[in-house]
Amino acid sequence: MQEISLATGAGMRVTRPGAETMVLCINGGGARPRPGNWSPTIEWLVDHLAPVFPDAGFAEVRYRVRSWKMLPSCIADGQAALAALPGARRVVMLGFSMGGAVSIACAGDERIGDVVALAPWIPEELSLAGLSGDRVTIVHGSIDGWVPGIPGVRPQHSWLGAERLRAAGADVTYRRIAGAVHGIAIRRNGRLISLPRAGAWLRDVEQALERAGL
Image 1 (tube, rainbow, N blue to C red):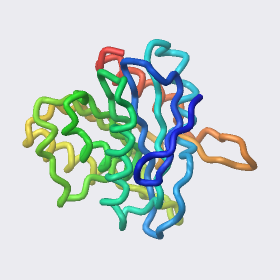
Image 2: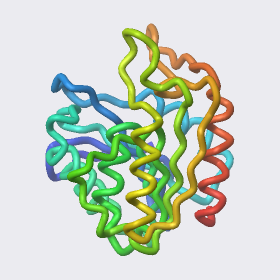
Image 3: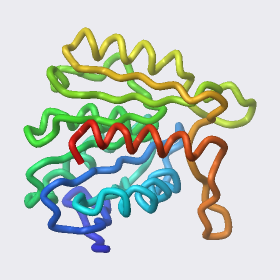
């Protein structure tokens, strides 16, 4: 694995650097600005997906500051990550939560034809102009945002986002996972712990990457 410092000051680590097809994995973020971290959900996915798709590379982004209140800064980090992958001829965006918005904002890059958005936050002010003709897969947990004390994005939000994406010309597939909350894994004492329905998330992401031609 190679770790890279991005032009914005964010970080990126790459499994199989130099691969011509790269999955660029983008983290979420809460309301309170915090230093960027390596997402346990994204890390869990990469651990499980990399062996299944041996010809693809996987790049994980660590924001400078992770907060949806600083979305332009996070988008700039995502764009810097794309610029740091000059050898990739094709890029698939894989975004979790706020990372869905960042992935959509980056989709104007000519190498991107597929976006996979997990429990995505898609604010109304976000431009969808770069998505015309792209494949977008949205996967969301059915009880996301409904559990007291656990932040998240309610599935009704991404459903409305899917309708807006279709109106913008994207080819949208929408999947809802019964009983799933916001995220796939958490980190505890340095170890990744799977959340309920992690296997279902993995199945749907694998299918989305297969549709993307990986």
